Image 1 (cartoon, rainbow, N blue to C red):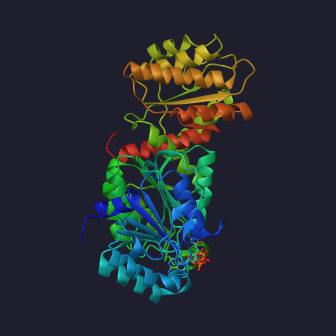
Image 2 (image 1 turned 30 degrees about the vertical axis):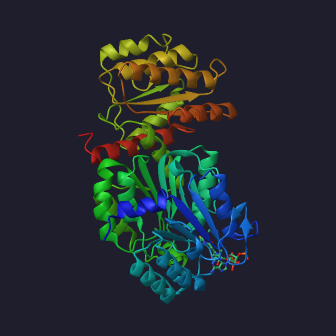
Image 3 (image 1 turned 90 degrees about the vertical axis):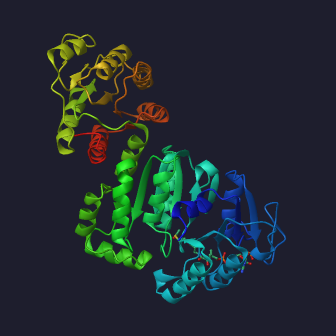
Length: 463
Ligand code: ACO
């Protein structure tokens, strides 16, 4: 069998894409996929296929894939399920390398025979299949949006794999609003051929991806997944949100994507054994991914909390214990250093409380000192909105400290929380844009650091 990574390059980096079932009608799935492909800026060749049209969205249409005067790497198939075997035969004759089958109406409704027929044809010709029952595929480095999800996916280095199409679409939209940068969105659907493990193999090698996130309902081959995951997670974090945790949830998963979920604790144990971080909510999944995609590994579990609010500091301290974040006992020397950046009534111990009168210089000084100290392994910066310090000025102080520290060779993970109203959200976004993960409540920042510590231990950065 050909190398899976090479095969999947045709899916993610195709030179040419055909849309079989490209519709003339706006609002129909085959039309919107074609529009996304064009408008997201795919630079390869695009061939709409439709026996009843001549031109769609300014592109020449071919009645069949066999009429295309060029090689086709990827065929996106958006025609009713019963017509799929015929066009797949044609794809085989044409020498198409991969297909993304959008069509529903296969195993998820008990139509397993049709699924088998399709798979047999694909095997006969050596075509790889993504799906069926999917929203498509996005790979931002290739400017490829071959999906009927939102168009303007933000470019970044997090791969997002989803077994559910609708959740895939919804979260694509959410990542756009939250400005979470993605390298890929892959809808897996019924996974009759390409599965999570195959994709992990690809993203393991993919230099545009630093973190892999997966929404999963079930696995066909748990052992294969575990084996590949155990290898991949040593190099890149893999975060899985596995639903169907309850008995009724598992039944719902079975009728959704035909997944036989199996006992949840088996998944839980398998994830632990293969170094997979298990998220319970999407919020966790993307919180962690954002930090793991931008921050260096944790090399010392000795964190310091820098805050202008005592209450936020206490909450973060509680959370630290809960999520496995060890708080540093600072040396007298470090205590004296922190004391320089606060009034007399501040507290230079950990949490380092700069007090409500903290200004941008206090934050800059304390954060920079934390970077410079050999005792500190990770930094948690908290800010409560006060009238004396504008959140954007606080964010700028943190950005400057991170930048200057980096220039001086100090590299360590940092997470931030800005607590307040509208203007703190804006400042938080600015931090995220600069690759400094920032969250609206202290616990999310601390929990994220906890996940980073877990992965850093697994990958051997942290003893
Ligand atoms: N080759 C090429 N084009 C063809 C062929 C063929 N053999 N046969 C028909 N076509 C054309 C049609 O003429 C039509 O074009 P037109 O609108 O210009 O006339 C176009 O292809 C589409 O064919 P239709 O028969 O109109 O099919 P329709 O678009 O209604 O449905 C679809 C196809 C979308 C694949 C549907 O069967 C389906 O499965 N829908 C669900 C898909 C889905 O939701 N997947 C994700 C699941 S996850 C989630 O829930 C979001």
